[in-house]
View 1 (tube, rainbow, N blue to C red):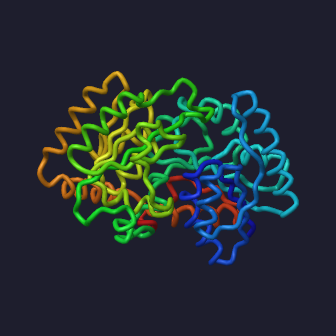
View 2: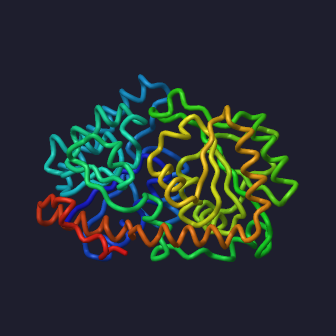
Length: 363
């Protein structure tokens, strides 16, 4: 079977890399396309995954729209030329490309419909299948949706797929058991980020001051960090970041993805942005499993209080690992599910009803 994987964000490299390796080992032909994103192409290089560049994203909403047409046409031409059977990805482009080609498009999407109106309106109707965490059952209107018990982050951070490398502590200059914090700040430049706000520079500095009194602080940012924060920049190689995160005392930031990554690793995770109440899978991690907390920028004082409260709790790490184990008991190895689903749908042409899937086979 010929499979196309379309990468539109660095997080997608992590989402699909184990899938790429397993499907290749199973004898399928894999092709990877990626937009010209240095952080994404560097990860693909570090993981030894060959790729084809399909162009750069636009800077404005209008230019993004024009570029989307180009990306869709390029993917459609590639799918037809190579005889792709199944396209796997998370982009509007992939969904559109499946219309004029024989390729079936399987879209893995963990964002609520209301959070991404453009994808919901212009992407979902063209996809053959939309695969989402079960936490989105009430936030996904498409009749093409297939739900599974898991999160994107469990495609690469499930215990079956990930073991932290303790050598990363030496790379970061910290000792085993030392208190340290990881912070992540987003640029909010994606089309679905219009109007979304995260932490202000002043709030970031206030948090750094608070945390620095308790331990080391490392910062990773999507855009260039403010000069006042540059000295805290995380210096480890990007493919080792999850190992370091797993040893962290706490994660704080305005990033959705890294908040979930910390949560599924059993690290207390606190985020602050205007989407605090809008992301279903993060709400599940907070309300059902108690792994993460969310605050809006106007609730910054409450965020500070929660951080101080957590740091005062004895056995914090052990408690979060217990919560993590409870969550893992309900969830699946998402990569194993992705492999089974793609082979079932691509090779047999079947779209099975959710009630027929025994998810216990993926635990």
